[in-house]
Length: 147
Image: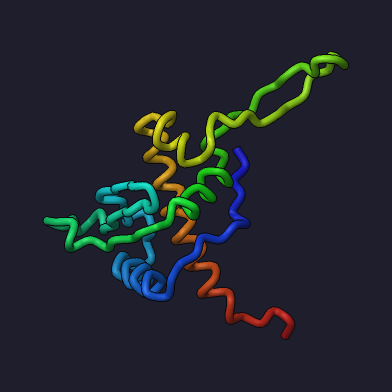
């Protein structure tokens, strides 16, 4: 499956600083960062992040991220988690073509259709997108390639 990483998730400055602190604390080994817990309501997905090698005793000790459902939906849609690819036959011209079939709108899919594992994949995709975007935008935005 092709992943579309061309979209941006809005990362507020305070959150960006906290994410950098976490990245530095795991010695830039992003695979050590895990989602300790999560919660979703009508407006926000909240995830608590921690270091796999330094588990915390409570969520208060974890990094709490609040991501709007609009931003979370961008990740689900871009990663095509709420759809599947299939081959259909054109009803009149009788030729086969590949198409992507939407299961449900992103958040409705997450809440109503996704399995426990698919929900976990969606949250992990969000975390991967945030970390990738953080590194790419902060490390490479100051470089001048024209020189």
